[in-house]
Image (cartoon, rainbow, N blue to C red; front, side, top):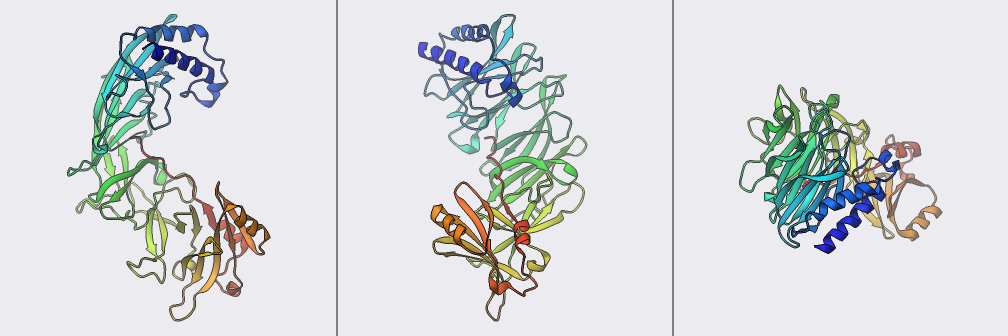
Length: 448
């Protein structure tokens, strides 16, 4: 235990010197907390010397320090949140909250949980005063049985307001009132898959169930979850799912209002199946045109690709969903999933051009060709994915190559073949650059 206390004290000094993981960038410019605060925190931790606990850190998420500081009650003074495993190697965890009283720090309470580890910790904003909750997710042996606890610090005490099971969980402000609701998704084995939403009631100091909606009947595994916007910049939660026996994706789209409750826009009321959100390729919902709203792709076989063929090529028609209208078509792209880039497909190309993949001199390429069912396809553009310095030197020495972009491991370039000359579907170098885009970092894994 002495080693634990010494390490905890060292951690506190480190936190003070670094400005704390929980603080915004501007706060990093502030002077470190005075040593007397560190000593006061250490003094309170020493009271735990009879408790068989060891320091631990959350496994995932953005808040991974063993000792964190956060203003939980909105009074402008940070509380201390410390994470312990009791005992070392055991399945029991304790989150201790300390609050400042005059020149001392006192224990305000703790949050207990069991599991294999603390998976993640976040601090959802519960009301307009700036009060934050402590959302702790406990990893279990079976992921379908993961547990969470949501606690608040009010009246100088820590109280757990909500506990339960989850498959994915996300705080999000879905009604644009400045406070975050808690969206909990559950996909139990052999049970009914649902999404539930909870709101904080400041007067009652309680988390109230505000709505529930089913997931699509085919949803079997939640792959990723993110908050974003649909049409009219209405907040939404997008749940990306794998379905049983399928390699593609299915997206459920949840919106919430106090009048209509929680709704799944991707749900067909009678059948319970997803409303045109399944696609046979592993591509997630994405802000494809950079307008700040999230579009949903529909996979469309490119001309010349037979149904069920192993080498079938797909393009993606992207749609923006709305709470009160039919989905609106936005644009079409070809997505090279493994290489992480999009190429815009124009109306003229939509029913005439297909993509063919291959390798050339050790480099992967994607060739866009005019499909000719009775003759040879006419090449319009070849996009090369160049790995390593040798291939990059080849790019520098090659004539007619158009540099499109680069990643940490590869350079992407294109060439317009001579055979495209004279075709009404041919592109200029400027048009090629305009239509090409690297795919931004995809959704992070959900808080789980």
